[in-house]
Image (cartoon, rainbow, N blue to C red; front, side):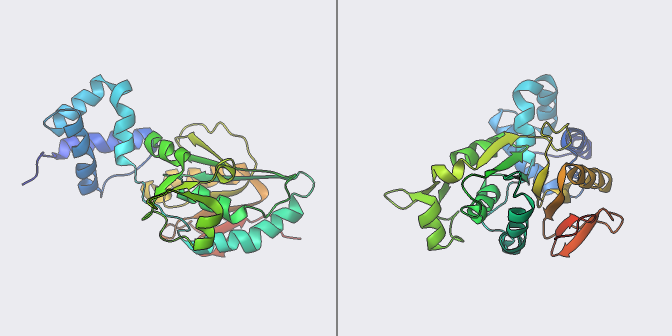
Length: 274
């Protein structure tokens, strides 16, 4: 028997609040909602989901951020879906070296960056690939303020970095004396700017971005929200811009503004490489 009862009414209220706040659809994620919000019920000293919803209603400034942080998923790893980074290194970087030769400017956006593994992987991939005179920056955003704090620190346990090669660890990380902690070196951290952003609210940045990573984020949205995001990414991408989405995500054939490159990789359809 579970510690707290989650009624249909309470689950519906939670789902509606989450959808209104950030567009995430929870209709088939009842168990996930239970396990994550049960922690908040305990943390606030309450005894039921009904009490928690009342508390949330009465104390939005104090609790709403924790409520959303608890719901959002933050599973990630370095070089996850490694073919994306192979393509970035072998195809996109040479393109940018030619196309952006005059502006000497490169902008990459990691949307849904979680604890930082994705943007730091992007930084490792592009490190040293552009002349020092170029202005190269990575914007990393997430809805969850807690994971952003962890990402900014750039500190990872030995289990977090198991997928990294010895050369990557030596080049980009500082290892603690006891070997249990790995900290991203300052020169790599300086390439990444972390910022909290709700994707469904107005985007403060104007772009253009050469590359957008939005991976394993779209699966939580309904079709209308996905379509809106695809259009938003298209509008903020440079003429030669590329979009990478997650391995379990797809873009409908109606999005003719994008050209599929295979394996959840896309570029603007109206661009022809030279």
